[in-house]
Image (cartoon, rainbow, N blue to C red; front, side, top):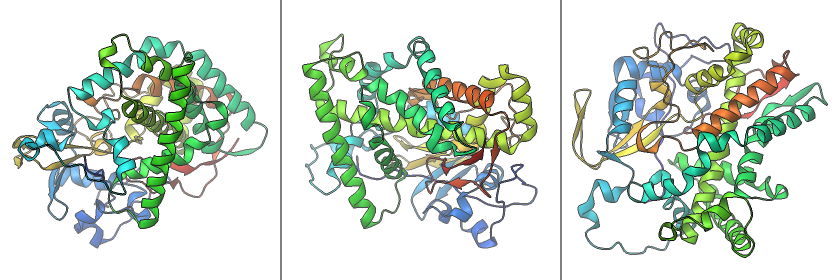
Length: 439
């Protein structure tokens, strides 16, 4: 698997599309309207701070679009996205899309990106069956709803402790004070990472989030990415060595001793799986918590309703996932010619699947640009679907529900203080860098 993950988000203003959020930025130039390839080339604050008018444009005018300049397809309609993600024709690995190119064993190419690719190539996220099935099967017992329920009291205790610390002041950055440390503490405890090492995760995770985005990378970032891959590999190799000598009640120890020894992870697979769980286990949940809180504060009537009806908390989390999803897109490769939306995707071509657009499709959701905490039904695909449906969905949902419950109970008068949302410059993950609030 080559380095680089394709991503795509953008913003376009079209007549009749007016986002309801008071913090949206619907303005964009006529050049931006017609230069669709530019939306998928690089991050731009002016165009990506509010991608939803652009999504609306795609849904109405170009739900299946080939971006010839970059050589990939963009699929945005809910029905098409749902169909594509479930169809085994669409795969993650080049070797499964174009097997004839791998008739001979590939030469081992040693290059500067090797530390990064050694990790990504062993992520179940980028593998197909049977490797994906095996890796997922080994990790999935830790993420069943029953296993998650055993964590509920501890997660709530952590959330209440963080809220208590926040309450010592009149203002706080919700990201650094609450939304980041909560999922980090949870996934670190699950993996068996010592408390004093949790802060290391922040820089590593943000770096890998940018790696996953793909696209243009500066020489400076290349050094940062390679350094992060080397550092995190050494870190988990040492932690794994400790667990081999002295197992504990944590996920690393469990993965070192599977019930069926034939399925045991190699050391590199185990290191890569730990890194994946670190990134996926907290990067998206930080965004889920803060994005949903921002939507609530941005919609006072919904905020007031949740205060009066806390039984809607789980539903509010689902609406937050739909309305301002932590992950905006994913990608696949066609392993055969495939006709969709009246157009044919050729075998071997990349497809960018717009989760964020699908979750605003008016054919699936009534009033899709409205944030409604009691939306029913709400069959969003923020966690994707098909074989690669998010393994950590039960944990993310529970963390989001507990986080909202604690924050709403402890800080019912919370207000958003920033003049506009500070979206992090990433086209794949949609999340805030900071979120200053008055308590």
